[in-house]
Image 1: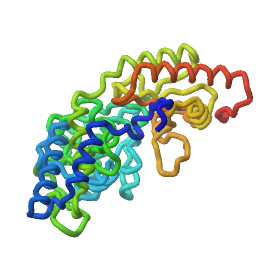
Image 2 (image 1 turned 30 degrees about the vertical axis):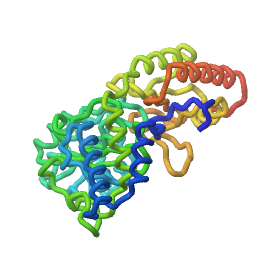
Image 3 (image 1 turned 90 degrees about the vertical axis):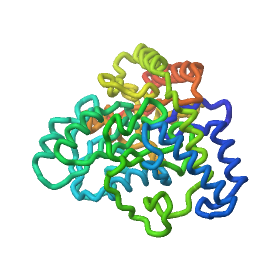
Length: 373
């Protein structure tokens, strides 16, 4: 990406860290199949095992509890299927890799801040004696809202349910502890905090049931058949080490929001009443479509997004905001801004200036606005 660009879309993917790049090049040059018993194979196995320890340390898991995957989507799918529970309860603001993973799941609503309704969850679990799996994300990818996972675990385990937590957006940004939270399954993805794309992990509490849907060799302790992506896994481990201290950007986030609201007092920060990731802002530009904002800011050399990044590349109305009770017209004006390891204060100042210029220009022009409610 040209140096002239200001990149503030780390929740979609965070640029690869230099230490990660070096670890991957070293692994690629060394080669070797980690299932081979000769010297090259043992060297590759050592890299995978070292990365497993590094990733486990990032989320308070034991190395043996971590199975590498191709990313967060596979980790989520594997947990929901592999847990062996036919009854699934998921929050209304989950990522599509959870919401589309199985049919017939029960949706648990959220409040205006995007927090899961624990009362509804408890009543829903009590409505049937069938063993269930509850899936609630650690942090929302669009709003940054942190869910009360320890409370979810308390309610679910009291009803005999297992708990899966999609921690893809939280890992490397705020502290996460698999055993401290008490979850049974935890999904991770390397590229959200400076690692490579195409590699993730599913951390599984020791003793939690799991049946792999992949047939083949006995890799990953029979939890995921197929030769491991050694270079990607080595990069994942390096990113986990580098991201160990998380992100101390809450002050920048709060300053950004205050500055944008000063420009447009009617702007709304979504999830502001809840604890959020320190790097994420989801805010409306009153009357201006998110698609217009993304394109205009891109022309100004600033990369942000509207809602979740998806393979279609289209800007669509946010299902997360709709689940939070936001009107459809207002939801079309929401922009997501997310910082990361490479963000500097000048990036945020540049965004504020461009956002201000766009808002002033739009309010005095015929640039398409959001549809009336």
